[in-house]
Length: 195
Image (cartoon, rainbow, N blue to C red; front, side):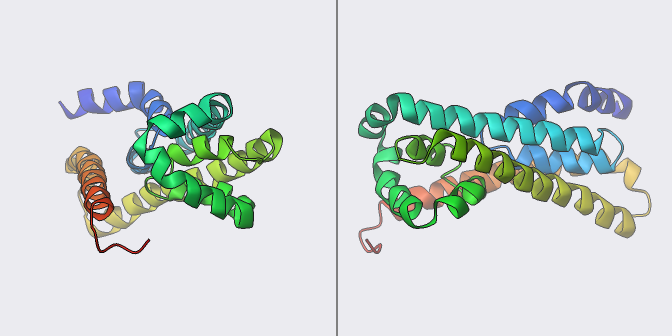
C-alpha cells in the first residue's frame, strides 16, 4: 500500500503542484516540498513547477482584469469590497504589493484581477510577478522541505509515518483555509469592524 501511494505521488505530484499553484496552492506546494525531502519528488522540479504555476495563475488573473475587470468588479462582491483597498496600495507601493500579493490570504486570485484594472503596465506586472512567484515557491516549498528535515531529526523511523504526515499537511492546509474563510466572512459581517 505504501509503495502504491508513493508511486501515485511520484506520478501525479508535479501535475498536482502545477494545478494547485495556478490557484491558491500553498498547501499543495508545502506538501510537495515535504515529499521532495522524503525522496518522493525532486525539489528543483517542485520549485520550478511552483514558479510556473504561480506565475501563470497570477498573469491570467491580471489579463482577465485588463479584459473584463470593470465587469467583474461590479458583479462579484469579493472584488467590489477589495478593489478600493488594492488600488490605494497600488498607488503607493505597487512594486511591494505585486511581489507579496500571493502571500496575502484572500488576495491571491482577486488581487491580480484588480491590478489588471489599474494603470500598472503589463510588462512591469509580468516581471514583478515572476520575481514574486520565485520568492513564494522558494519560501513555501522550502518550508515543506525543511519541515521534513526537522521531522526526520525528531522521528527515528519516519518511513512508517511519511505518508500519514503528508496527508496531515494536506488536511491541516484544508482546515486552515476553511477557518480563514469563515473568519473573513465573520469579519466582513461584523458591524463593529473599522472602516
